[in-house]
Image (cartoon, rainbow, N blue to C red; front, side, top):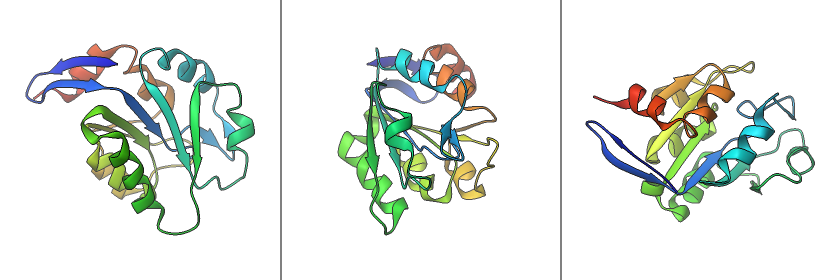
Length: 156
């Protein structure tokens, strides 16, 4: 559990971190450097969940051995499926990170939603739905191990 107080928003107690895979944690199906180490470190305080359409069919092999659950979505409205997934975890206890149009609903709904503009870019709808935007997934993940950074960004 990660608990912090954000002035203007109040107490935030997070139990779950939900992550998109391609474009967020990975490029062309391969995890970006430094992602695996950060996910392993975060698993001490948060349940880490990766939810993806798995465009390249690599997510399970790429994340094997990491303390993260992997959910591969069935074809259909992915944005609604991702929203339903975070709702099942409890929105007030969940943070999410994504970059695509199919991430926008979960980013907006979660207690903390972060967008990443990485090498693949980011959908404007995802950026506008997020509480904060990062240009590197490593920096986005690091706010959960250094919560004062999250406070500094989100305080009112």
